[in-house]
Length: 208
Image (tube, rainbow, N blue to C red; front, top):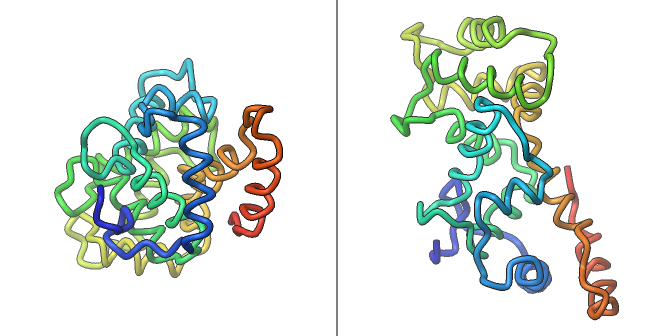
């Protein structure tokens, strides 16, 4: 990535001291400085998934891999941390929009949203609404011009105003779980003292 921006295009806001701590954590886990897709899935315990669930996680990984080189480097990683800890709804919804806009066209059509939530159901189990019901509900509520596609503006404005839809969107991939897993990850015993110090600082980071 290399430009100090978040995965939604905004400036990274994680304080310098916390960035140093996250760097130690990242390099402890990934000495090469790069995290692969397999390592990402292993980290989150997302192995042995069916095809639809795997496709969903692949898309999640791709949204973090902003330079599209097939790896997540530290700058991309800290951009993801920034997205989680800054707690700004608009920035999170921009990320979810990118996640759902699979073809990168700048809008979400019904098939993209339907496919996404079929995958979410395969990953998370039975939901209150079926993927078809959820897709129809979303477009009924927030497709203002009824053209069968959701723009970024429609998506953010519509989801932000509807707590039920917002909750479902957030649950489609729990961003805070990524941070929690890394924060609670096992560190080498030889660095026990520095780990305690690092985690004490990381403990100040809010995980929503």
